[in-house]
Image (tube, rainbow, N blue to C red; front, side, top):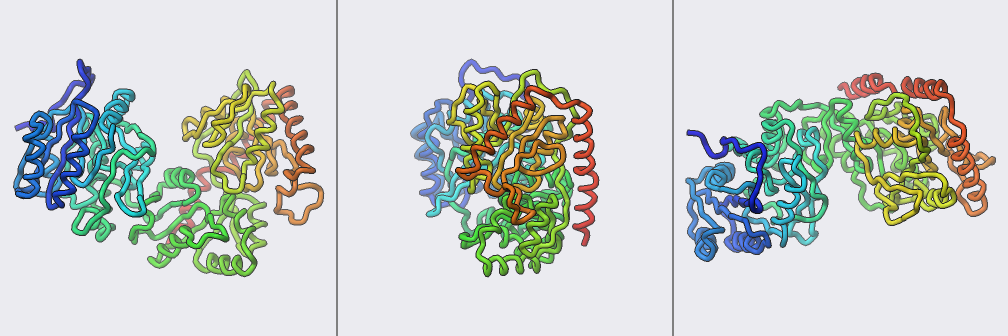
Length: 563
């Protein structure tokens, strides 16, 4: 007999009234007060078309009594379903089969829905018809008020580890059965099954606003089971969904998006919030960046290195920029201890150019130069009709790496030049000649590069910026104080060179900045008025393509991780 779960629904759903949302609450062995709290929060929603299915995984008089109070008060809204004890997956499936909602949420019995949550979910799904489900952040009811922000939808990333909780809403037509054979990590299995069955489905990320609260993991719960049997449970899910199990893990604390794209390129696994789990099946760790400050009492990078080193993994550390800058701030005794520990723990250390290599050598680190290639592929294309200069703007740089105010002063000084700021900062700054585009991901970023004529990147410290490389590869100009072939180099270190590797110097102090600013302005105007020959742009792109050869990078890393 065909189950409700297998029935097809119309590909185009039109509603004469607002869609109904079904909250399926699996109930088993929980404090009655927690269940009451959960049902009260669902009853308190300001959205009218709600049904709540109390799906009991076996009889329990105390818990049934809690549910009965709601059912008797509002029988049109609260309903009861009972099965013989068979586990949470069976209870969810049984609850779904008696539900009628257009939208479904498998809402745990220890959750507390925030006021307005249901309406927010329905509005989000209706406003994003290209998405099959919506999801976002939730909070644990602990003293620390720990929370999980989740992350934007990426199907590849979902295959690495779960970031979507089971409680979030999905259109009914996309629901798949929960698998009772899955002992824990059931939400991961569910969302993988959804994306397996519906390959084109997308999820709408609701952002970091808390949607609901949950009790912290408790003994005998599913989270305890997954923690205690992590390797076994992860391998079960990956084998079931035919996900390749890599022997190498890529991660980063300060450059997470960077690390994720590197893992995709290399065909390695990626971890962020599950990186500290007992991932004993990894034979090598590729760590992008080592961000540590002298005043930090605890360093996550060192903990991660020790975690995998203790499990016999080969450690490869790739220095990428700001992480090198922070080594300058350490007292001599502290720095020597840190470098000694790194040299002992890391099997291989890499960097991206000769300047980084020379600076690291001053600290006692021998690093091999291995440039990281861009994620996107570029070709030299004609410049846009209207001259526009892009620059990075962020409020999160902990040492004003991107010289935010100084860069903004250049924008103010050139009202006849169009500028575009990318990144998470400066959105409150409004100038007639400035456009804010926000944070851009892979495909958006490539389009943005081609929409601009030049990149302005004046920084306090850097090694080999990927943005510079991408603009050159696309046939654009780069104005920067990071010396490299074919860039418009702005000397901010002055004439007195103390260290060859220090490319930044005193160009931002009160006495020298006016001269530096003038040189930047003159360079921008020159590039606007006199375009470089296309042959020269192609020559630059060809040289950069050779240096940033993706196949060579992949081959090099795969050789390094061999055990």
